Amino acid sequence: MWSLLEQLPLSFAVIAAATLGLAPFLPEPHIWEKLKMIKAGTLRRPIDVFDFLLHAAPFVVLVAKLVQIAIG
Image 1 (cartoon, rainbow, N blue to C red):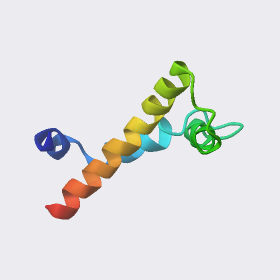
Image 2 (tube, rainbow, N blue to C red):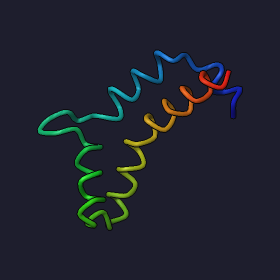
Image 3 (cartoon, one colour):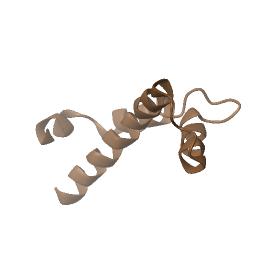
Image 4 (cartoon, rainbow, N blue to C red):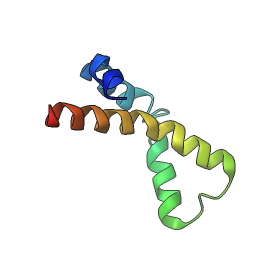
């Protein structure tokens, strides 16, 4: 797994998180809506869970890349 992260440019991970992770942007970022649903306890439908995972994935990759850079 680390070899895949080593090959991935940091700029690609940042762009993916900023675009795919936050899209659609209006009326509010989709990931933000799903996080509010988790807090309210209303994230129950399988399509909503899948949607949350899909929008959260770029952020997970970005964090993993940053950790990989930090530990060298």
